[in-house]
Amino acid sequence: MTTFTALDPLDARILLALDADPDATVLSLARELGVARNTVHARLHRMNAAGALGEFSRRLDPVALGYPMIAFLSVALSQASGPEAVAALREVPEVVEMHATTGDADLLLKIVARDTSDLHRITTSLFSVPGVVRTSTSISLATELPPRHGALLRRVAEG
Image (cartoon, rainbow, N blue to C red; front, side, top):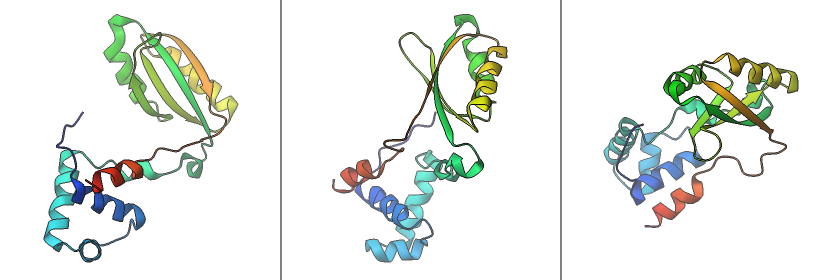
């Protein structure tokens, strides 16, 4: 995990402007924000190098790739195999997000699937991962709030 210094109000304003227009050039951002082009360029470069900016593919809707189903899996691991199991689960293309958690399960996975048969194939295949002891699956019926950061960016932009 990359660590970085918290974004300041100008960083947040730059990112909000990019959210509004992902194709904006550095020059157009500088004009819109009333700062020097080199300032915008340096800020974007610093945020990217520090790991504050994620991959462009995170913006992609899995539905566009033919994966309209979302499920969340709680996964219990054998303590001796934890790191190896995590490494193996990272290799499963349909696992789009993974969090280490407290409670009954060790991991929470967000999985995308083509349909229920595909979800069954994926969840069944996870038991071939050494160290996976138990899973529990919940299917998402609707996305009530997609991942968002705009509200947080506005708060930081306001100082």
